Length: 312
Ligand code: CP
Image (cartoon, rainbow, N blue to C red; front, side, top):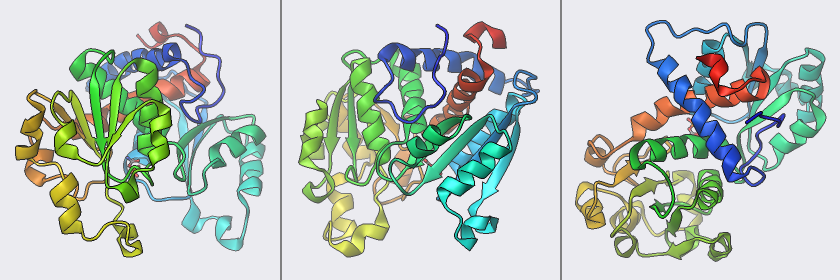
């Protein structure tokens, strides 16, 4: 399959075939990650800018590593040290990057739609590294890669996503792609953190985690956004953890060797118990490794212009 898209903004517009192509391209990329010398000349001369207006550990560093492994030059745009602090707009920042002839911009921003806004302006490719509460497509793709690795596919697999669905771009992107790939998705959370309209995406919604766990092939805990606790969306962290926190005892309710996922960063002891996060069922560290492979695949497809076997 020849990749034709300039940008990756969300998963709404991608077909199941395109999602599978990205996952397929990530397989040789993961093999490269296991080599003693992780450096290819494939994207020598290409430039990638990391434009992060919000904090990030995993997404920013994995994109940076991914681009460097493929031989591209990377520029870290630090908002704290940039002219954003002097009032420069996203539009003018984007035009400045355009004038430098960059090939690819990875953007994270608190405003939903910011990645699409940049993609419309820039000749360079744009990858959405998370925009507001809208989408986090590369997180979802690395989650699919991990699920595929462990479960062999998606058709008929039961995936439970539990936590703060309301504020989660990870949940939104995951739902969109998992449905396209044929998985059965159940979203679980307290009524204040689980918008009822999510059911229109073709998923089951529930407020009772213990009822949804039996038969689950993968369970994904989402970060409880503690900064929102003041707004009265749930009574206390202790009560939330009792009803919706994952732990070793509770995960036994699945009756399977279920994989336990978390996009990070984790609140240990809140949405997931430490012993479960560090257990053999946990694939959380694998998700991080797979994140580099999937982001290598995306960078390669967007600005490498080739097919999978070019990197062999
Ligand atoms: N999962 C995720 O997006 O993590 P970061 O915020 O550290 O990038």
